[in-house]
Image (cartoon, rainbow, N blue to C red; front, side, top):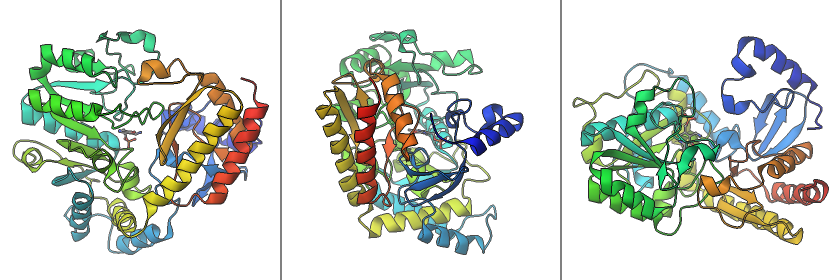
Length: 434
Ligand code: PMP
């Protein structure tokens, strides 16, 4: 990339001496000399340490639903932390956030808080196992449910390692994941009801939970095919399996009530983080009272920071704003214009593409016309995608460097931001050789 990142590069060198890869999450390392370090974020914009400004479409991997450093959220946090950040006891504010969540999300009857999406899925899996008395977990290839060991399987390509579609091989996505966990995980391609049905026919009664993102939010935003989520719901009912809908990315983003409202589906449990608190650390899991009620009755869940006041106060303010203002509607209007505009530019250039996702989080795959799972997504032109993204960054627009990661929008993205982005995209498609 041809961006003056002198200060970033110097910081990367310094950081690499004290933090592996010079970052605190593998996903924030884009490569030696091509990893920007940030100075400031406000509204829909980012500024790196070299003073370059970007229209941000990463939104911190999704949490920023209103805009960076949203004044009303910050003010609520500042007010509440004056009264103390923690007391290892419960505040009324937590109850209010739980009540708001339950009001907004159709499938929630009770919730418990956690600190990150990873923790939320980890707790939900334990509750599902405790409730069913079973240990096996079923997940879908290319879906990501956080860094805990139970579901960090078959998350990243190479898809060649996944074996045959009808009889997939679960592939751990990291060294250090205990091998015996292989006995407890089943991985299947997304959007393949026949394969799911066959698999459950032989082992359905040994499966504790099916954990599923509503769309492939960590692989090209591939949407569920018509009625696939409902099919999963019915299969879970048939075999007494707990359906865990992982709404860490879709929650409070694709609708106020997330995918449950959008698809009119009630899972048994659901997990949240990201947009719940507009960038402050709070996560949650919740669902049916009958299942959630086993917590505290022989089932453990907790954590010192699970009711951290900045996170809880930020969630309170974020949900209040979502309920009061047309946040998602506004994002939908602008996001749709961006999706349509990008599609038009590709069409006019004669480049085959496939647009996926929702206006608030979308992605596109190039060189393919239809993708339904990670295996078909893997056939898309990822190097060309990357070249386009890098050229966009040179023009002050920042989607994520990883083609699996969707483009995220927030309430603060203006019509002008969309116009500027489309103008840059038009130039980039002309300039970058396919
Ligand atoms: N589930 C999903 C669907 C996610 O997208 C993510 C994060 N990208 C997680 C879980 C993990 O969340 P966290 O990074 O907060 O641990």
